[in-house]
Image (cartoon, rainbow over all chains, first blue to last red; front, side, top):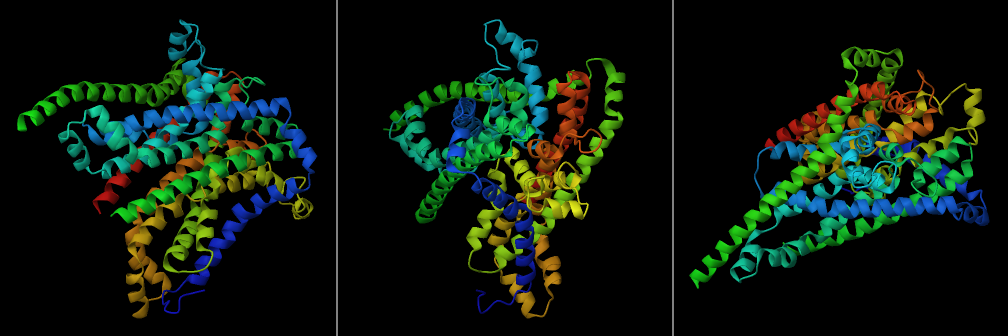
Length: 276
Length: 280
């Protein structure tokens, strides 16, 4: 399928190496998941995923990931806005710190947030005065997921905000619109696809998150047990078929999330291309 | 009319000042509480019982072994992903062929897979219930619950990190320069070294830093595949987990502080590379 005018060497070599490494590291292992689950009957699969404990872990996973991503969508827009539009001391450090969740190992984030939000911790102690427990509850899981997800939204919204033409805002201002109205009617509609992308990426990541959540969750069945944790405990009991079944459900969920993100991204790219 | 505009602007600046300070305030508070405070917590917890306890925990035999294993896994992840990233970027940006889009999607796939599932698929591929397990056993090759499994899982979770940085840069660069060089008789590797690489140098370094960061911190995937054999298959994050679960909080945070320092180092390197790359 090479173009007839190709003069650059290395097609065979680079494509060959790419396919070889891709097969060994990604394709064959992922295929083994499919092969393994194909050996199970449909009723076995349904049996596993309708166990009350498994169902409730799905509920906890989706609920906390959704709430955390919602918080991140709001906080991410505020942070991106502040970083793009305002100047203030420590701005560069704040901008760099946003990336911390990518650089800090999740297990370290997990134990740090646990120590901080337990009743004996600085933040947890404060909230304990009001009878609010953070660590070892679903609030704790959500806090950990907010930590994990925040850079996704900020880094999705920031470049769009940077490119936004201030002429529209000025025009709206000249026409007498208030700042609030300009934000809701002029700025926010431009940001929606980027916010959705950031939300989707954060949600996908949060669904599968394990390291930061496992310490702060307390892992009580039906209360704070997330789906990745159930997979882990099934594996420790060498129940590979249950683990694989639950993994398959989570995998499909994250693929759907990513697919939706891609659809929005492609459509947005087309609009941007057509507009300019 | 001009007075109306001025009046409007005047009202806006007053209102927007309040909005500006409260938004900056909210942002600083969020960054401090969610991001900075956890870092401070790690350091204060690590030194809670003084420096002697801290250094004892850091210099512990198992900690040293965990550091070495983490370095080993990170080294292999960066090395393999470098080879892969360069080849994939070259193949995907310099040539047109069928299935290119699918290939690009497959490369990005691993980041969407939960770390736990990433560990699970290697367990299924090379573990006891795998069809190739007897073959591996005959050849005396151990992958699951051993170092090769950890290395494989680490490569998997960092798989697209380098190629993802290279592809957009090479795409915007086009193929004209390489075509010209090839027509003048330059060999493939010469073209890459003299023409392509200078363009992608910073993007490449950036990818390496991101890859190394994720590799040293990977927890879920490695946790599934390692079998938690202390001193044998324990990476730094797993060592932190074991200590924490044994209620050895001070040693756990002491070991975690090593990872915090590495994370800060990576953030600084990242922003330096980004800055230099942008200057170019």
